[in-house]
Image (cartoon, rainbow, N blue to C red; front, side):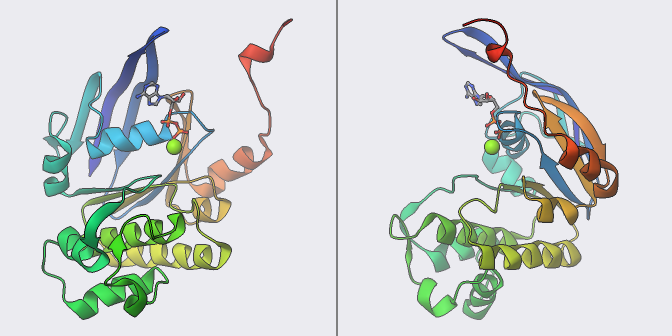
Length: 242
Ligand SMILES: Nc1ncnc2c1ncn2[C@@H]1O[C@H](COP(=O)(O)OP(=O)(O)O)[C@@H](O)[C@H]1O
Ligand SMILES: [Mg+2]
């Protein structure tokens, strides 16, 4: 179980201090598929990075199975069982797809297992297994390879930041299947950040983030009707005269 208690995150930029996340309280039970959604700039990626340990919260606590992991680094959190797929995946020149999958799984994966992980994300293993994870891969290919590495890890908490980004329609259908299968197979929890209605629909629980705070939590049946009818666009800088 992953718990966030009163987690806030502030940054200081040229304009001074800015609060990006404000008192986030969340409990994510094992074996749950959670989808976090909300407008652009509402703090979703920041929240994912706080969970993965890429950012440290300014205040608050993060607990994994009751253990305080707030001060743990990204490497320590990865060892504790948290994995993270970036909105913009990282390229590793000099490392092959096979190496990356082996590395992710702790070297216990066989060649044929590595091929299975690639097939699950819709990539033909013989075309990709020996490719370098560099600029020669398209954004969509890289994203799918990153998802394959997370499947290989099978951790307690797997966080995916907008996995649909850059993925074509055919692969998108398969991506949904990948998450459904992962949800069935692994004991841990899956957290997906997404705007896609079809991904929102497969969630056990939806969390809506707005302006750096949790706006609502509930099942898709409870949250989606409101979310889909809510089309108002508010922009404070457009109020009043120019
Ligand atoms: N390191 C940072 N420094 C300054 N502002 C940041 C930083 N990281 C994120 N932000 C700002 O925080 C807000 C939330 O960003 P983000 O979490 O990426 O939103 P989302 O993923 O919901 O689109 C945005 O306004 C973004 O510009
Ligand atoms: Mg984001």
